[in-house]
Image (tube, rainbow, N blue to C red; front, side, top):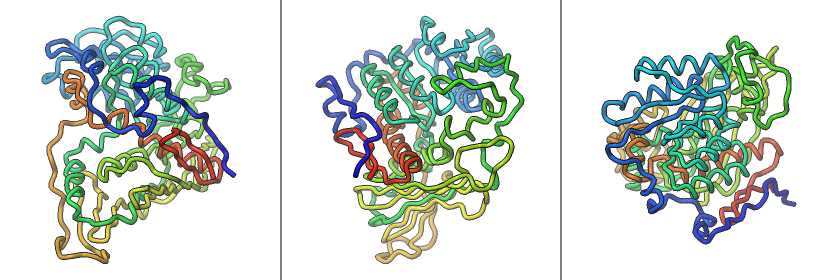
Length: 421
């Protein structure tokens, strides 16, 4: 018996009829071109989420292109006063003036003359902030995983499609020259028919321990952080170490796995898995923080293109990490995604095309932030488009649906539903 976990989301307009069948990269619409930023106009950017990712990845990543691209950061938003002030100090150093500080994303989106926003908020807020920014007509850079649950994912994607703005999803591996080169190599057919693609990404300790810090209640808008989660007394470890609490991040399958599954889609051209099973739990790290994100978990997807994808994370032992694509003519190793290699080890139909161990030739590509900035002016589709974000989000939501129910999750691209079997 099948149990439907999400409502069927029906598209209301004829313009979205094709999207209801399958979200795939499409030609840039006239509406998108109308929303492009002029070649000589200064792009005014607001930062939603000023934690480590917002400051050290988004803000610094953008700043690297300040000379080439005409932009400025004009507003910073975070429920934690300390993070806002740290982000504003960077703006003041770079641009010689203060940014507008905002506690809530609502305040930032109400500001006049903001063209674009970056979103590096906690995982449970990504789709809320994405949808709101799209409805406000902003260009958007949004962190992965793009979705926490399926219904909010569909609403956010539909809002972006209606807005026609440029959205870059933070799966930046697909903009690495090494991964672009890997995709081009794969397209030659050199690896033959894939059977299994796997990632084992392990560590001695869960990454969420690295984020624990002393946060004072009086410095935080606790309700803004919780959003639609039930109210409870403030906890410094929950606020700073939210990655470790399933209610706010769902752990390494969406956290780490979103990168890998998106890379699989990018390299192979695969669209959506048909089914997924996922098992795991918290086995090693049990202490006073009572973290609930699994420290050991494995998800396996079946793809209609004819291969199996497996992602496992053991955060209780760092041995055994690997990242490989297994074909009947060759093996692609992305253990180091800055320097992928390939050989024909174990391949039953190796034909002599691959000899020895070889390095993948990189192909130049703008980095992820430059790509986004350029697309805002050109109206072109960025490298990690909203459709690519939807694809990886479907996969990770399927995995966590299976994890939560103990049953196989099944995706129907025609109905846009995830059910269990």
